[in-house]
Length: 160
Image 1 (cartoon, rainbow, N blue to C red):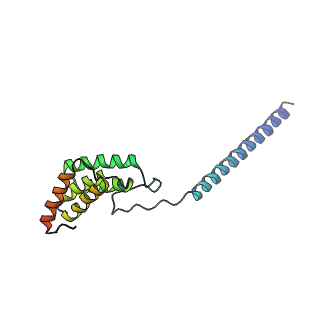
Image 2: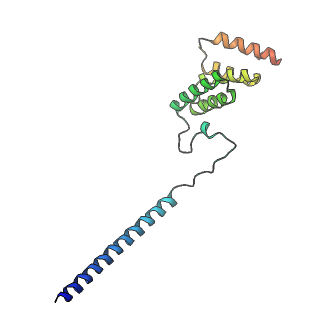
Image 3: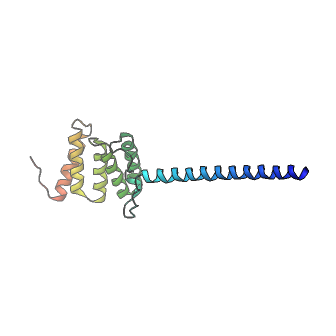
């Protein structure tokens, strides 16, 4: 009788192990299918371009118009300008312009950076754009004087 009880116990135990094994395989397969399906639904990520600075570019999923990011770019650009990293500052000011078109302040700082770098014609354009966007600027006379000084340096005559 004891042998029959042991045999019954082993059969039940083997069935339990088989059921648990099948359940694990089923759930594992379902999880694998779900993972594969979610991967195929997501778009392929673009490859990184080592020629550009990824820190100054918009991520693909970020909106183009982002006034908060524009303010942050402006702040970081001013910092770069203070420490003498002119190219990085110009990149950040351009990013601020891209993030918030029609915002005058980045053009002012971009003009300053371009002037420091010796890009006088570009600085004139940036300063003029600043005054176009902000015609009642408190520093309008100062900026107009800068424009005239730069025009004289590059030999450009005032346009009517």
